[in-house]
Image (cartoon, rainbow, N blue to C red; front, side, top):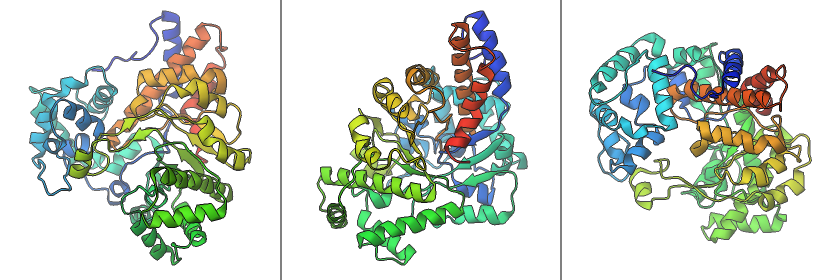
Length: 467
């Protein structure tokens, strides 16, 4: 079903070279340092329930596209939080998905899904109304077998390490269970995502800060003890393998406020009295505080701004967060990051990975910043640009200024478990195609290309995430 030369250059010499480079890296282990799979899968190692629960219900790429054509998420089994009902018949969900699979023509989602259908489940027909039940029955039968349980698939996918993402209030019980189970076939680590207790606009912010205090035994209404509570939770997360923190703020704004001003903002935030600008200022100041903590404990700081989250108030009220209505927005980095970088940006102990949903800043802002500050590295093409075209544009716009070695390889950033090998395969093919083009146009020596391909696939991500 899949073209073996997909995503390679059309020019014969470049295509041959891309094939050769791809052969060198295609079987390297997967490093997945930034993702959102459920650690409970690996802890309990229970079978995935059925094809719809595996491929449709948790995948916002899927229900976002179908919603754009008038099919509400609840028809696809997405839970409602407002008391409304959602479809619970998994076969009905799957049939609806199959009837509308044509909507994904030309999209990365189709490539990921068909890669999983063929390489994970051995299906080589095209999904559609006529094959929906055949696909469902075959996948459902496979999921009942031990070789399709989460741990077995983890090992089959050749995943060396995967990071999940938890907030400071999480007790990490699933990570503890994984560790205590004695499983030696995979490394599952956590990452520290403090948004619920650093973002005054996050629902229940004051209550979340109170819970943080209860967990740590500190008075988190006191600003100094609030910061110490973060230090305690970061240390706890490190015990379960965390090597990074993860910050999904709306902007890249940073601040380095005097302590009195930061304290006053914090107290206003606890009262729910911050203006929009004050809330953004507090988030920005906390990024700088988190950078200082990273210098202390070695955790890599990931910043991924630029998403107008939960754009539809109706969908937010109906389904809650993460239902596919997050929209990219224009984002500035040069002035926004300056307070943090002036405070700690030249410290060699600090490592910051920057992401963007605004491709216009790669050449103008991000590549020049990463090409100068030792603390900065560029995250890969991400989210809406996690596509062959997005990856190619990323390399074209960043390499000339930042080179390859101020980037961090690839991450899949997904909740859809079976898409992980598909996404990494796309990244490896695109990078090999790009390197082959550099060689055939005289910009890279042919003997250097295999080393760069391996670095982009495996070495850079391990180094950047301190794995």
